[in-house]
Image 1 (tube, rainbow, N blue to C red):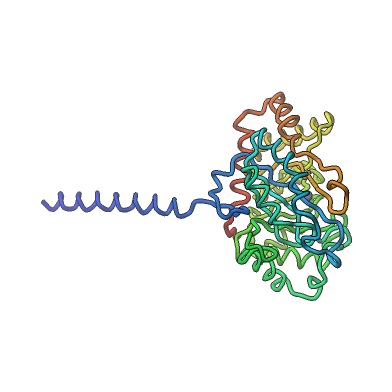
Image 2: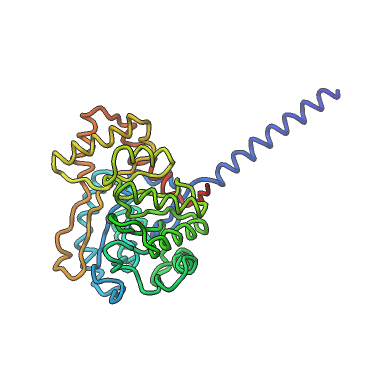
Amino acid sequence: MKTKLFLNFAILLIILSVFAFSFSCTEKKDRVMTVNGWIDAETMGVTLPHEHIIVDWTGADSFQYGAWDKDSIILAVKPYFDEIKELGCQTFIDCTPSYMGRDPVVYKELSELTGINIIFAVGYYGAIDDKYTPQHAWQESSEEIALRWLDEWENGTHGTGIKPGIIKIGIPFDTTLSELHQKLVRAAASAHLQSGLTIVAHTGPGERAYEVLEILKEEGVSPEAFVWTHALLGTREDHNDIGRMGAWVSFDWVSTEQEDIQQLVENIKNMKDNDLLHKLLLSHDAGWYTIGEPGGGSIRPYTAIFTHLIPAMKEAGFTDDDISLIMEKNPQEAYAVKIRRI
Ligand SMILES: [Zn+2]
């Protein structure tokens, strides 16, 4: 009798823990923030993680949000979105930093017209002689800067209520980090620890990436929360080392030139040979409807990955699983909104 009671009790315990486990699994589902609000990361599908819709080269001092005609931008950019939709792209990440032409209203409209999820950024661009870094960034502390970004995260950008889904910062390629640039990285770390937004940094050569990673470490942020953007400017050794540290390695330049494609395939192959394909991100860094130029100037299409790179990868022996790992699974993990501490 006692044994039977005990058995019943044990069965009940097992059932309860299965319930608790499945409940905690559904609770912890990764999510990303799009211009239309939260979506489950697993529904992102094929993702282009580093592109641009609009750019305004005016500079932070005289930048004015909305000094453009939204409808003409939408009209000019939509065909480029239709093209990638046709090629299977379901999620598009706009990496334009603050003060450089972000327009959440245009993004939302484009997303609604095409059905493509759009995620956009908040953060300051410290490259190009700090022309796009607003004055207050010199005076304020990293905490104060982070609070400005977190205000957008909580309340939306430019009073629209539409929220950014990543932090994007920029540092110069060719010099060691100045005090201001270190501050931007610390601000990104602080904003990450309070929001879970992934830190995407225009970084360039490996030396810069190590500098950023060192600061993130001091601030207690895991390399998993950092996307090393423009990683093609680093060496293959850097790709391997930084990938092994857990950071995301972003190859974000794809042209239609045969020579570029072959070189890129070799770089991707190096990642695969070192079991690091699960840390790789691929995108074009294309688009760029330029404010002030007629019709937005020459907009670069977001298609070379689909039309040139993937066929070349397949020819080089990459499988469909490899490609879906890079184009679908990795972005789900890299851009999930979650706090990643060391
Ligand atoms: Zn870019």
